[in-house]
Image (cartoon, rainbow, N blue to C red):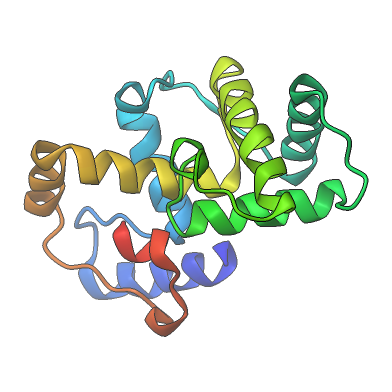
Length: 169
């Protein structure tokens, strides 16, 4: 949590003084990186990070634009399924052509429209913070090398609880 990260940052400051330290949750760390390198994924540096309510409104708009009926799945369940895909670093493009179940076909129709909606709005949802950074690092060895040079030590609390997106970052 942000509160735990702030507590750790306070303790670290006592140990290292004013040495430059980047510290925070996976999401806050990725938000900082994404703002700095946003153009690499087609976003402006002043991007907006949608909270759950804003993301749900964007997803509802995407469902409407996809012209699909949510007869056997709720908007909340659809959001959770897309979130799980993003946390496994499955992009909307990767899902196309690989859908098997009726839910996957529905997601394959909505997910790319949702992502385009976010992109046009210069926005990301919470899961995009990790996914976009993981994609940037995968696609740009130069960026990865630059960050490797600038980050001598990395400490991850509760490492056993990381998902694929967090592990990739």
